[in-house]
Length: 94
Image (cartoon, rainbow, N blue to C red; front, side):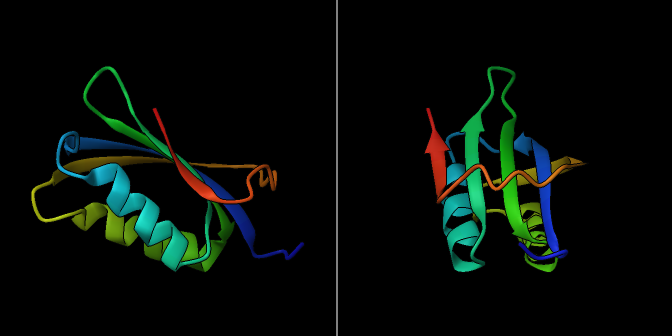
């Protein structure tokens, strides 16, 4: 386990449901070698947990601000948490 390992919980606000945002996040995380999950929330936001290299998480967050073409992200609430190594892959939760 590297000292560069980190974990971030994101609440992504804006037009982020029904625009392939979760698939976009999964592809981004897989490309960057991150693990965790992403899901829609009942309030219209999207929640994601990213684990892995801190620099890669930073790149993923930057991509999450852009999102897929039909999305419009207005805010991302980022909470840094303790790295747990709880996940083997990055998945979409339903």
